Length: 314
Length: 275
Image (cartoon, rainbow over all chains, first blue to last red; front, side):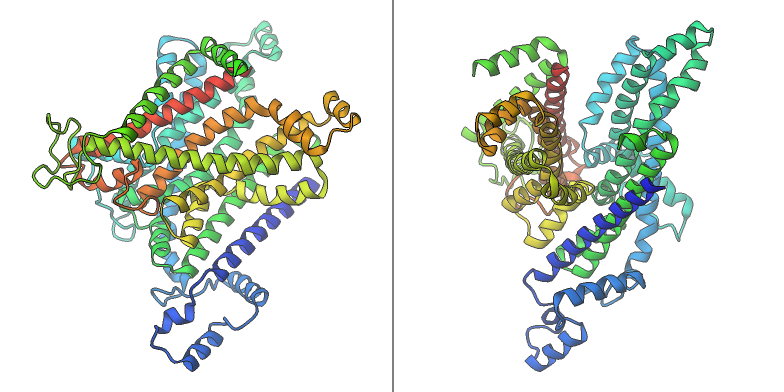
């Protein structure tokens, strides 16, 4: 329990540090939001009124507290460009990016775990080594280039999907998912290669331990030893690795959405950065950070739940 | 120098990965160096008559949508990508080593407070951090170097701190203290050289991540600005011509894979050589 509390506090501190950094960074950069809103023709009085209406005349720490407090009530400010609450704008984008990341993560787990088990079973066979080399090359392919390659082979040459033919989930959930398969695969493939490499090495290391020899000498079959002993022990490092991948996938989705023309968080973030729409940028960055910190927290707790020895070590 | 040579032959004999990685990287560097001295055409010169020409004797690797020679652009583009990655890693490794060394050596409140910030930054994917910086300070190649450099500090700081935590209790450190050697001298002349191997493999891995991050940023259009070429920039420009001229659209990507593969194999070779 103390462990959980400690981790929770540390997560909150991290979130606080990031929120302060993000808020002050955007507060001190040159450019007056009131001036932006009213245009350069505005009279000084109108500007002054606008500033006080937007709360810009308050001291920075007060504005920070207001900003954070507003976040908790679900008010993430108003977009400069669209003049619509940021929450409303992000509302339609959340499921798109959410599904993309979820889909890639599912692909990662579904592809990498059976593959690694296969590798561990057929250690040093010809196919094992050939696939490790192939994996090494796949690892070196940046996800966005993987996206372009998939578009080329499966979209243009084999015509399995229409490049740029995104369908929104409100119109047709089936086709939405079918289209998302390709970008998800592009995000997942290089990570599958990394995961297989790590998990295979981890399982082989476990397989060399004494308890495995003992299990064999007691007459357990290979399958038995593999699934009941080795897999269990090799699973822990895999868990952290997968969680790390999940957070990287969120970041990777920004670029992939651009490759496949998917209107999610990433593209919106990009448009907002280029258009200097700071409330949107702040909200997206804070949202992603909160998600990343949450994933890390859950991993730490899960890790502890699976292996109670962790507490003594830390 | 002699020590470096011995290390090199140890790695070279040690494993295939290092050999392949080294050769790939050397060929890549040669390609870029030749490009720095001479390119067949000026990389920004447009040839109206030969847009997306495909492979011809005049343009052995074809031309892009503005009729610019692909070979020349690839040479300078790879150079830009490499330079940005180099700058990024230098900033990250230098600042990270200093922070990590001070935190690991002195510990205490300094360590606690600096590491809190470093951990917060570390949890953050570097491309997001770079996006944030670029949105604050604007795009362009120097901004990208600074943005990515800052984003790379945490990983180096953590690695070096770990090394210092391990080393600071060793006898040679105590003995140097007893001889009255100053803390700074111990940190930079006694302990840091011992962290060299670990730092080298993190530099190689960091270099890779920097190449990836730069390519990603430029691909998004907020990294290097036209008419400058970088591999990511070229990929994003040519993506829409994937249908008409697939080869010239894919070439910058293959070069990128080549580059990353070379560094990652060399990096893993170094790490494997240490064990």
